[in-house]
Structures are given as C-alpha cells and as structure tokens.
Image 1: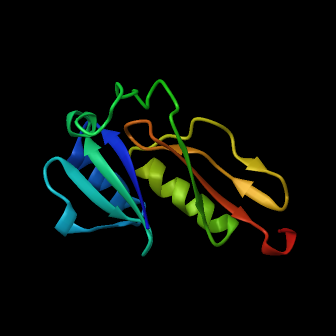
Image 2 (image 1 turned 90 degrees about the vertical axis):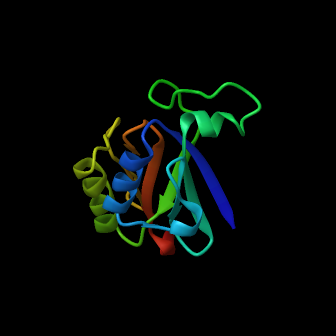
Length: 129
C-alpha cells in the first residue's frame, strides 16, 4: 500500500475537489484535519491541513503553489479517461499549468489541485510497452 501525504490549506475544499474528480473518502481516517482519499485498493492520498502536515515533516513544508515537490502520475485506462479526469479537476477548482503531451504511444496532462499539488494523469498504449 502507498499513502501519499499532501499539505492542503482547506480540508473541506480538498475533500470536495477529490470527490469531484471521482475518488471516494474513507471516513474512518478523515476528520477536520485530514481526508483519506481512496485512489485504489492500494493507493491513498492523505490531504492534511498544512499545520497538521507540518507536525509530521522533519523540514519546513513547501508551498505547492510555488514549488514542485512531487509529480503524482496516475495511470488512466484511455485518452478519454485522462481528459475526463482533467475536466473534472478543472470543474472542481483545479488548474492545468501546462499543455498536454501527446507522444502517440503515451498521452499525458498535468493538473494542480486547488492547493497546487501536481498530478499527471496519463494513458500509455499497452502494445508499446
């Protein structure tokens, strides 16, 4: 299992965003300081209020709106699914900070959540692997 911890300014806004792009929230591990976002049976995003996130971090917390600390690539089942994910993200307060990349065998877009955390939904042709 993997748990990716992300700092967020507003936990409720983060919850609305991640539900808006189609992910479920695990209420057993969510409260006013954190959301447990279920990406898959083995991948979770923990959106932690910035001060709460800082209590775990051994170094200062970067501002994801001005610094990239991680690019989280999420495989999607098709080009259309990549576009649908990005459109849902944009409709729920996200932004698209760069143009799509289409290499023929791989299609990728980049989206930032409302706090600036970066995701790269992509599709890769299985025959090209």
